[in-house]
Length: 343
Image 1 (cartoon, helix red, strand yellow):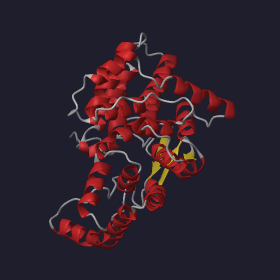
Image 2: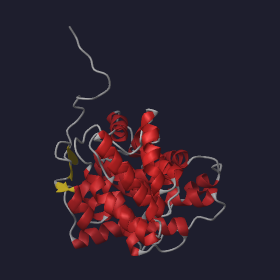
Image 3: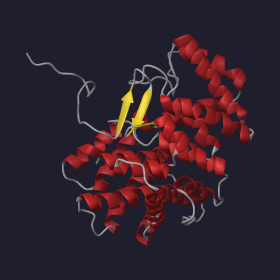
Image 4: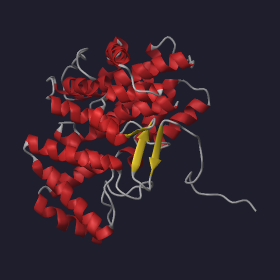
């Protein structure tokens, strides 16, 4: 008698050396390196190189990789023209998905799927995604896009293109760490979607467009946005406990808590929690961290449920000045490394 299961839980879809989750111990490993070590000692560019090449770069390799990323940041004039015709009411994820799909029309080797061509496309997509997001953000607010700078790192360059100001080193490093933490997470929904597309011998851009469309779904990429909206609704630390208790009594879900894989604390939370505290205190808005901490303490005490990566990443991105509806595109900027490495 045949048996079947709902969904893909417990199904081995592929084997990968890119990332490994130890749910019992609460560990996340990229290419043999613990996420805590990478977040503490590496940059996003180093991790991007690691994921694509299987080893951390030497100084000369890192310099060359940074120069290559910088050289690909500018968008083709035709792609910028596409962004300019998007209606201002379009959502950022709609704009990102459509712009990435359109980018293949400005690539003479769009349908070439050789390893070398795919590596070049991966680098170009990684470099251009922040430019697309920042340009759309400015255009929808009636502002001209700011060209990328070659002398800024990946995270700092995004903040510069969004605001027109070179960010403080602490802010750039905070976004850099966020990017590192969200780089990959085994066979998640968007990565699986990208691999399905590639499995038909489709091209890199088609695979990434599929991944972005999957990430757009609120069950995958929207949790930190929902968490921040909850913090804004609560407003003050003293209101946190009553808000959560009422929500639980009404059987409402508290966003940013629980994980299907981790049986203990999400290892990324251990990095984001102190990062949120530092950023909020430095910006003079400690209440966002304080509200978050009170909610977390209550959820652990009353429900035995730990915060996941989405919970503290919400206040980190918000304090960095990133609009709430750009949270999921920021996720895509980071996960681009994992997507392209998998396909």
